Image (cartoon, one colour):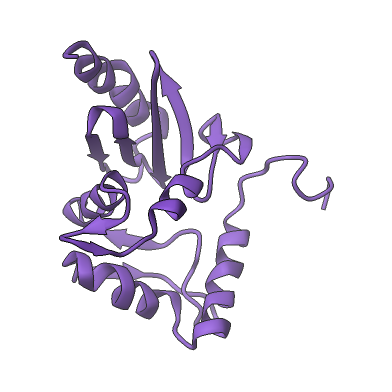
Length: 177
C-alpha cells in the first residue's frame, strides 16, 4: 500500500474481487449464483456469462457479460430506487449511498466515485454511471428520469462513448426541460 486507507483513490478490480470471495464465505453462494437469485432472475435476466479465477471464484471487478437489454434493466432498477414491479430488490438507502460521492476518484474515468458507480454532474444535472471495458456504459440521470446504455466493440476507446453521452445525449434531454 502506498497510502493510508481512505486517503488516496486508485481504481482497482482487486478490491471488488475480494468482495466476491467474501460474499461466498458469508453466504455460501458464489457471486454469480447470488446475483442470479437476488438480481438477475427477479429482473428477467437469463443470459449471463461471468469469468472466474483459478480457484473458481467469479471475478468481482470484471468479466461479466450482459446483453444491452439486461444492462438497461439494472439501470432501471437504480432509476426506480431499488424497486422492480412492486418488489424491493435493493433498499433505497443503499441506492442513495452507492451513488453518492465517497472519493474524488480519478483514473480511468476522471470523475468522483461511489460504491462501484462513478458520480458526476454537468449543467446542474447529477448523474451516476457504470463503465466497463471497451466503452460499455450505463448512465442514470434521476432528475431527468433518464437512463442510457451504450455498448460497443471492446476496442472502442472509453472516451468516445462517454463523450456521446456528455456531449450530445445529456445536453439534448436537459434542453427539453
